[in-house]
Image 1 (cartoon, rainbow, N blue to C red):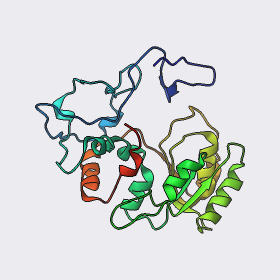
Image 2 (tube, helix red, strand yellow):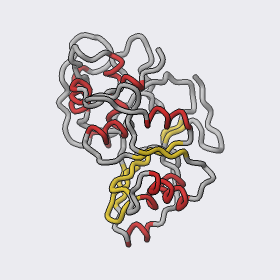
Image 3 (tube, rainbow, N blue to C red):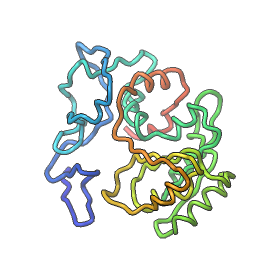
Image 4 (cartoon, helix red, strand yellow):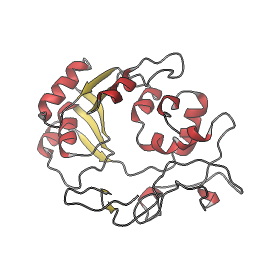
Length: 245
């Protein structure tokens, strides 16, 4: 795959720019030798480490990968390699399933694509999700919608007139962050996960007056043991997300 940097900023995520051919893939699981349980501590995600498929480091979409054993985690026999590969997105992006697993009273999802929302709102059954992901409310948004209007409609759809205690932006654009601020409750928290836009304008005075915390989340650290536990126990079921091979 070859991506070229364009004026609109394609072929990049944050400050990481794809400017030459590279192997993609950073969600991996496999079999190997000499694997050991990693014992990493601290915020090592902020260190200048190599990260699969982050320019200029190649990804893991290959038959063989040479990887330090001390950074590997063993999967229990009950989990497939496909489920194990989901430890990476579960650490940072599968926020709906994580929010449900940790007992959120109500989870609302927005997306530009209706098929994504159809999957998100299908009912859960028992301890795991059998047909979908179990969102309590879904709203298809438009890139042309005004942030205050989108936020108001999201609050109405989710029956949360006072706003959401936690808003997680997995897109990372100015408009999505503006919607997040308008949808967040006073004293709530916004977590920026996506890095779609390098610079943006936000109403920080509004955030200050309403005491809304805005925090960043870069990759993840010390989360794989918890992810493996959630998957193995059935509290998180990623099987509906495995659609192609």
